[in-house]
Length: 335
Image 1: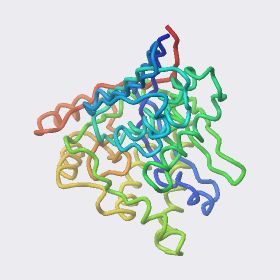
Image 2: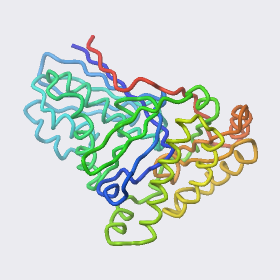
Image 3: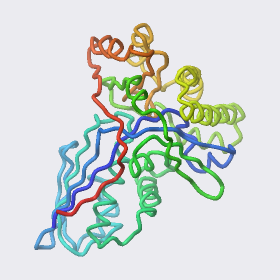
């Protein structure tokens, strides 16, 4: 049996970090806004006639072998840790080879690891006979990632991976809810440039320190998160109205807010690229993910996307990404 799965990465427009529990419980109306992109994470499982388990990551150039008898060792296996923990959790009863690959650059801040997490869960769940309903995938993914990083993890990335499209994810005391945003996606694609800075993301935002300081009662951080919440809600409304002037204004005003949360969210290289883009038709910059490297998304003036792309392509190390909005989320197929 061969199982192939894929899931889309994402560009986060607003609300990052507020999706980490329990932070959203302190900010009524907490939400994030993101959209899925066609830089997919792939997982392929091929069953074997023996008891071998072979795990391979094409991106990381790493591969190792174990067996069904030693599957318990994968709980604390440092090699390909995410894959190992997921295989341990699903505890399959047949040998197999699992190969993964992501089309997003390494350390891009496009939720590559969370997306791969969902793709692997979809494939492994199929391998064990669809043990879990799809609505359980996101809690399983978050639990596994938290075990890996030994701390809390945000939730918004799993929703874009599983469902695709443009989304507002709402965080409430009674649970989380994804809202599919019916907007003019053609205009969204025409006005956003995504560039990889050439620097892998180096944790520009220390989420654990922010979470700890927030819980300890840091009033400045509390007020910043109130603003992050408001930005998400305002952006959602502007997108639903297809009010692109307002979208640009909201994104432009949110950038200093993120810098207040973590001054290390940009590097000198990123600052150079942001200045270049703003001087060539970009209205606003949105650092993807935690920052400190990775990708930047730029919201551009109408008909200025190509001009911005050409200007950024001139900078050494930078790569303008070829992407399309991805309306389809996780797919799992048995061949």
